[in-house]
Image (cartoon, rainbow, N blue to C red; front, side, top):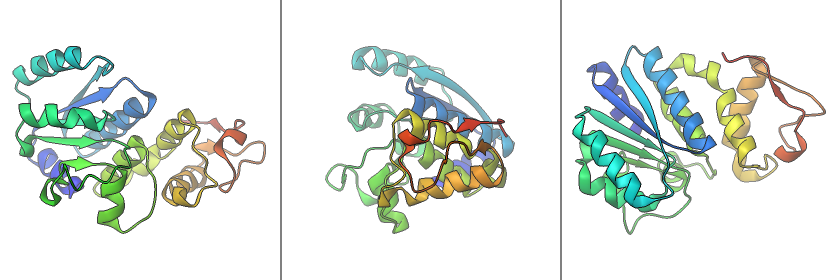
Length: 212
């Protein structure tokens, strides 16, 4: 699994380089991974990239690869970047995480899905019919080996706010569980009738109390 692949890098004290897209979801997801890897005594750093211009991104990526890190994690880049990354890195050296819901059977082989994680792949491999943000996926990946990550459970909710996600939808049960964890730990304060079954846009009174 993706969790096992990342944990293996941590346990072998590999230099893990996180590349974040310059989106709220990308930055939040990368922060979750940074925290979890540090909680697990791993070695990691983050760099933020603007993916709006693919040629500029390619140049920056090649510069990073020349730095010769052991392992790379890409967070919240569009699936169109996957072919570029596979052309520059061997599969065993990276993990690619985004929130696309595309059925990727035609472009991603089943044995490659421990390298590529998106909403559709996570649903298929975990037998759950849910939609995900990139940050909720990084949280679920980290949760498999880092018990302390629950104290960062408010972070995927921040990203969900940024995308105006409607928690009333049936395909948001996983995010509702993450939100409930944050509420139970008093990481998020319930205000103005914030409810797990209400649209996120109506919960504007919810405020973050602490950062875990």
